[in-house]
Length: 575
Ligand code: C2E
Ligand code: MG
Ligand code: MG
Image (cartoon, rainbow, N blue to C red; front, side, top):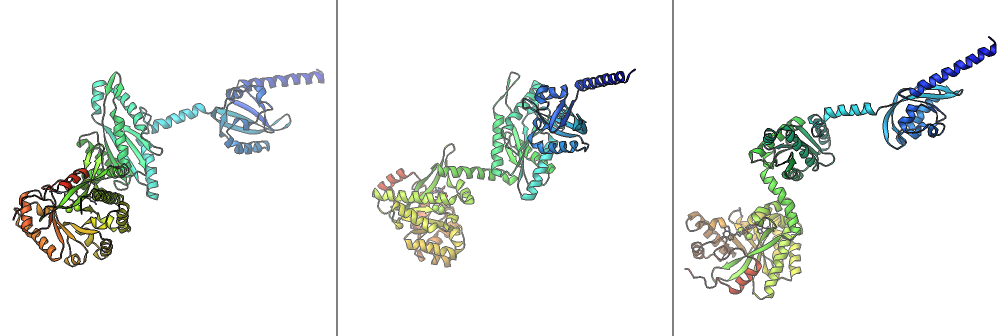
């Protein structure tokens, strides 16, 4: 065998080896590549298929950076540099980009090598899609309810724990809303579990529409759902509960049936109702049962006092604001009658709220809310302006001297700009100051009497009349009464009601009358409903009276008729 023969045999052997290797690489079910100077010098069929390229598009034209997410470029560039300079690599994961732009997770392992006699790196690439999807599925099974796809109790606990950690750090409240369907078992028992399941899936979809970013709606199992919300006020919790009930209310069309379900909802708030997930959830459950006891299809807060009173209050607050904006308030007027002449000397303006759905709402129901929320100030300003406007309108049609009395709440009276507000209302209407009277309660003026004396004096100097409303129920100091520039005492209705029968009430009323006389104050009796009361008051020489006996509070136009006819002038004179 000649040297040439040996050499050519060796060559043939080499060529065969190489083609064998190539075949192996080409049929391998893993991506194999060679990179040099940042470009692919070799890529096997599997890799090309995976990315959706043909060989000519890739070899010597594209580099790894063209096939991966831009965010990972820096990292991969660093890896390539290391391989090229001979540093062995470790497996790492990338987000790979196919020719059509779609992405898939891949893992890469590269090692330093040579290609055509120069340094290069050779590597393998594995498609991780299937593995990742399986991992995701496992995570879902652990964290999500398989029926509805909602987070399960385990994930809910995680999320709530996170919210509580934030809450503890920066004081953000956390709200848990526990929803349980009423009589859901009946659907399962009568129509079968598959119908029940369909209802739960449909319900989960509807409830999801109420959820904001950052909230977690979860299914605990059965027909129990829990919504966890960060940073929620009581008012919004109510709003959410209402919307959840609303979402349940439309019938579910399942398996040819129209099914109606109602929920009972319990609400707990961190921190007041519990400091950790378990106690919050337990208390939400307790509140939910309370809602069931109350007749179902409703919600309850865990903290008992949050329930009825606060709910009404909060709902009223936003409604009150809207009522003011929408002009839903109006004034009725009740005559203040002189007991000697029977003439109507004045009228008291009494606010009403014409609610679009509930009808006329009386001030005892909404004034306390307005006072608690500070809305009394704008509402009071409106009352002042409207009463002055009406008083001036009556003057212009010639009803003669008539004082319009306006109730002033303590908060309104104490606000800094009150005197200016009164002056403003008078100026805007053109009304003479002597035709307006402000009714203040004893409590209002006696509390911090020295401070109030200044305000009262300023009003008095303007020419405005002042009266003490609900007199006898407070704790007036005679000393102050003498110093206050008040012109009238209004005996509270509670002393007038049983005037014919109750000797104590008689004593109180007549004491107020004679005290008023000695202080040169007018005395008016409120709540006079019958002739017997009227007679007693006349016997005491009480100056004025107000009550259903004369007239209920009436709208302005009815009052005008009454002012023009003066029907009490001819009232039978009693001794
Ligand atoms: P008030 O100032 O003591 O007003 C008298 C209340 O007694 C009125 O109730 C009136 O309708 C009622 N009344 C009058 N005559 C009789 C009667 O013969 N029998 C009975 N049972 N009741 C009679 P109303 O209108 O419900 O007002 C209740 C309270 O709401 C008022 O008591 C006053 O404190 C407050 N209020 C009314 N309007 C305003 C307002 O514009 N601003 C403020 N801050 N409070 C107001
Ligand atoms: Mg009054
Ligand atoms: Mg009163």
